[in-house]
Length: 348
Image 1 (spheres, helix red, strand yellow):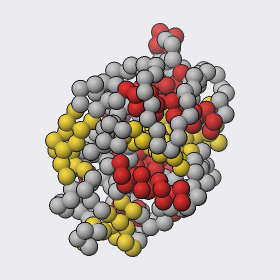
Image 2 (tube, helix red, strand yellow):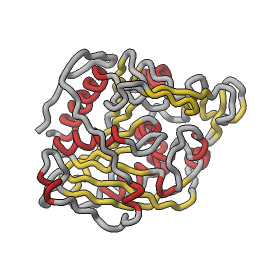
Image 3 (cartoon, rainbow, N blue to C red):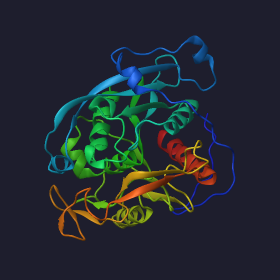
Image 4 (tube, rainbow, N blue to C red):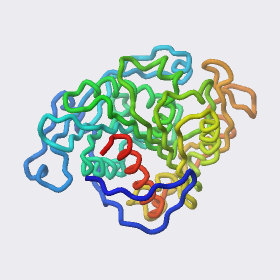
């Protein structure tokens, strides 16, 4: 059963609280890829551990690799097969709620496993998508142009279509959660235009959770969302994905009557929920558009508003050098906020 924290207002900052669950392991999805067609059963010893998933499955699914231009025009890309890791919190046949997770620009890192553990302990299944391995990538942090920014949104739709048919998953209780680049994927998966162009089948996400996303690009129609709640968690000191554009976007969404809230944390850098980063990590080559003003000026045309020309990662506004650092109060507050949201949405 979940233990839930306080409810927080739109802009919130919370002080001391209980310690986060510490997790230092990392699951290698690359290692799973060799046997991705075979479900992986955990040993009885691991199953007996507190909070351990009762079944783990590596599940491949079909998607596409396309540029952002093609995505925005509703086009098609190159067929691709990627995989995800499903953890079921209990044995038996009962259907359980699910959180699908999208990783960031550096791939599937251990802080995502900490969130997986929290879901398992709460009786919620998790499915972590590996958007990189099947495409021959390990990281796009220093070369963001190597994969479209909206690739995660497409992967999320395809994962939803696959997992909603799983015999243990309740198709009415599936939430999308993303981090950084994956947070952007989760946030924009809620846009009605993108769902209409790229989502197949009757399944729908019950809600969206976006951690420190990039909100620097304004898309045509991005204020019209599907009728599902959206929650954004962002550090106000983030120098990878700037906070101000997300604050502005959330204000536009709220003015348009959307069910959205921004949880903002002062003095918090990128990946503020990663407990292993008590010493800040500086990535000197990481690309950031924190200084850019970008908009889709017509369907599929992504424009640098300062130059009036199509945006490129070679533009002068693209910065290098970012900081990632753990902030315990922010992490605790964000964990409580996610718990509250899922408790209400899943009726736990």
